[in-house]
Length: 454
Ligand code: F0G
Image (cartoon, rainbow, N blue to C red):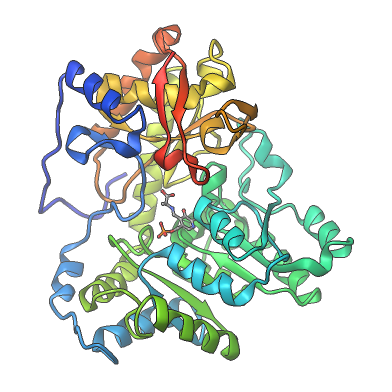
């Protein structure tokens, strides 16, 4: 599948020797977040803010109007976001989590519950920071990593209805649907599930919002997998999805095809006024929200490019091809392949390591040691419950590793290289050693934890 672009500007990548990589990861406390970018050959840590911009985006960036208030760039951004989402009120923010903080501090009260198909980690943290409780209700199909059910990102509608009708129903202050479901294998949410959730929330008079960081990729997977939407263009599907909700919070570092940015979309005028006051005090005036005029321009153009069916189809095909190579090499990934990332089943590949020895983390470190590849663990190191001595008390349900794929950055040759390194590890998995924690912060552990090999 040919991507609809060719490369005009390139950036060198680093090739370190095996010994240099061994020293680099040791001095990083075996935490890939502590590595320097120039110590990495292929960086699959995140698809956030890591995409390549287009010549059209760089051209319009030159039109960036840096006026403090009422910049022309703001109106171009607002019109693009407004027509995509259909929301009358748009507030720009510098990235998704800033939007979460502004929105939740005005929408949620201490003691309330925020329900999601799965909260992303910063979303989870921002719900807790306002004194509310995040509750995840993923659909049952999500628990079977190998099944090829098309919409494993869905929320469990029965469980949601049960919660809303039960004794805690009155405490639910928000239902937030993450599209695609980043915490659960990049799986999409169906339009049927969005519509049913929307109706349920309306009946219970509970605000229903989207965390729509990957709205275009979700739309593409709906186009591919939900028969009623086969003839609808991705942009129209995305607009329909936004239409089911009362508002959204969006990180534009993913499907905005830019390094920074985000927005809050709202229908409610009062909520908009409250969020706007908070935004002005903490992010910036409401016509720039922490962004420069040139960022707003790149974003407005990026939002046009990201819904191109050809682009989405090529990106989805590239991820699916990589999944096939990895699966053929004997490494299982969460099925079916999504678009922005592949999730390796490290628990299954490394059965000689117990969850307390962090098999996902061990596989991630091995990918760096053997190939200079950086990625992120999504297992017991990230999600497990631990005591004050950093001993694992409750393991995560799965020991996964996420290979996030930046947009328009790596060619299939780069991805083949990653698959080849993994194939080598899969030939002799017993040589991968486990890890133990040396020190860890009290919250958002994975970012600053330090470890050592066993
Ligand atoms: N929601 C989702 C679903 C996300 O994946 C992210 C970020 C955010 C919110 C927060 O947005 O980074 O702009 O503040 N995800 C990145 C990742 C960091 O690697 O998955 P942000």
